[in-house]
Length: 120
Image (cartoon, rainbow, N blue to C red):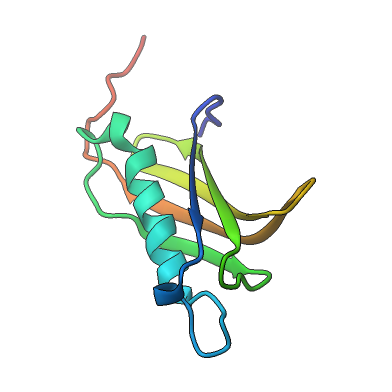
């Protein structure tokens, strides 16, 4: 497996009224959908060889997000081999002078057989 560099994709959004519960906390399914959407966008260059929808492998929710919080999602293709593409996504709360990580996830995509030619 190889680690790929310079394959980062980002997305930003502000937590809106229709995305929170009664405690004004971001609904988990909204965060998941945003991460899944970024996973699909991030893997567009590999669209012809991907054989599956994103499959959540790991999810860590570290902190909550609240109404009007500014969030940034960053993705990075972590591994790519003959059968699998693995994408990591981190979600940050944008604060005045820093970014605070609130969530991380890992998505897997299976690849079509014989997607890569052997180099000899």
